Image (tube, rainbow, N blue to C red; front, side, top):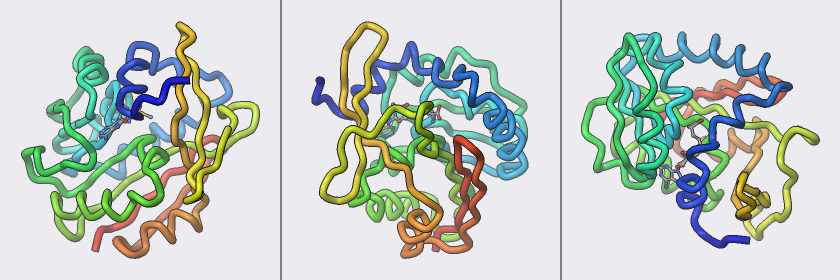
Length: 216
Ligand SMILES: C[S@@+](CC[C@H](N)C(=O)[O-])C[C@H]1O[C@@H](n2cnc3c(N)ncnc32)[C@H](O)[C@@H]1O
């Protein structure tokens, strides 16, 4: 089992990442998310954090005003660069989610697809403070992520002292990694965002949740 960082795991996984969007049982929910997200970002200048291969960037670009899509890994950004986007102009940049001061631009909405689940619970205040410092109070934060579904989700292999859950994951070539992956309930997300944000909304699908809040 590799003890490399989350960033390194996703760099290694970049070429096979989009397989996760081909799971047959999740197709109806993915279609629903693709209906729900565009109205939320319509006309907004979007900062996307941990954008990966640009799967959701493509969806957001149908209605957003502009998108700056960031990810810590050049490997995922390189795949994102092969997609076609529009009509919103999309800028792709490498950036650490905890170092957003390096990202130029003006934003009124931040989108994180399947990133919240990878933030250690102890790091949530630091992450939210960094977003607010970069984008300012009043910024809308839109999050979507996985629900834990036995039989579809990779089983949780370990729970750490802070309540963070971990999974043992394997790439196509057999390399194995332990990855932090949390599955918050609505109540947990409310507790985690309440110190830094208000107006939480929550939509629960079978395999995913979609939430928004406004940074104070
Ligand atoms: C689960 S993937 C989500 C990708 C994309 N948002 C999606 O939903 O398809 C998590 C992403 O986080 C990126 N990542 C890992 N650590 C990061 C960090 N510290 N800052 C920014 N991105 C990071 C990985 O490279 C990976 O692309």
